[in-house]
Length: 232
Image (cartoon, rainbow, N blue to C red; front, top):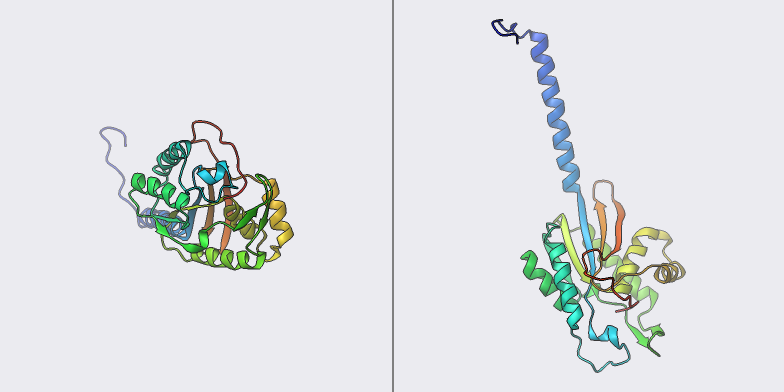
């Protein structure tokens, strides 16, 4: 408006145009909010380094975090503090629960133990060679339960502390879906790494029933690159 001039009165057409633009803008905002509510973000965290990772043949050793593992867990907890975690779940193994407890203190969430997030059971014949004690079909049954559990969660930002083989199996199951086979799982396991205290991110859009793999094995929050151990 030029100084000293009188604004022209709003015509019926102008008022309708402004109202239409307002309604269109409001609908876009509501649609975006609905989309955000439909999408869940799930952070899959491998437990920090434990004694079993140092010597998997020593089955009598207590299942606790190493000194380095405790540092890894604290670094992961700081990362999780930036992720708006609303619920925290963990495998029942002590190494996973110890990691989850450190994260839980930082994000102010009590870890909930879920049995089907446990590791696939193996038997080591030497430090690098193992055989599966849990069959593929048994594992697949757990993966189905885990996937359904995640799809039905109400919270939008969820963290799960689990294990190397299980995290890779869950991601492979999501990728291959109905084509998921034992051979595909083995190929995926051999060609991917999930380090101690690493973070992987997946999302689920419940409106479209669509999964997406966003991030795999992120260790940028750790002070040094971890030495990868394939299992547990």
